[in-house]
Image (cartoon, rainbow, N blue to C red):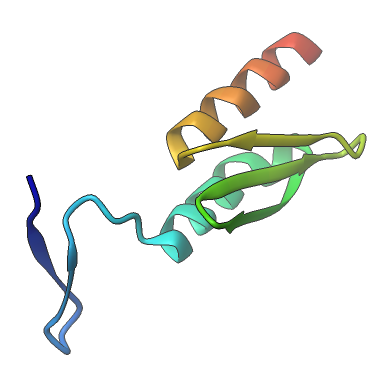
Length: 77
């Protein structure tokens, strides 16, 4: 199944299941930066963040990265 949705005032179209990478990265940073996570990035659908100790956490989606960060953060408490 495929679909499209309007993106922005310019009327550009994108697939419904395509993630807005900039928005997802900004949201991750907003939520986790104060917890010691930084350098959020995505490359070739590979999402990552670096802990304050220099560990690289990854996920195949923004949600998976978020779950991995949350699990890491809970383990550190």
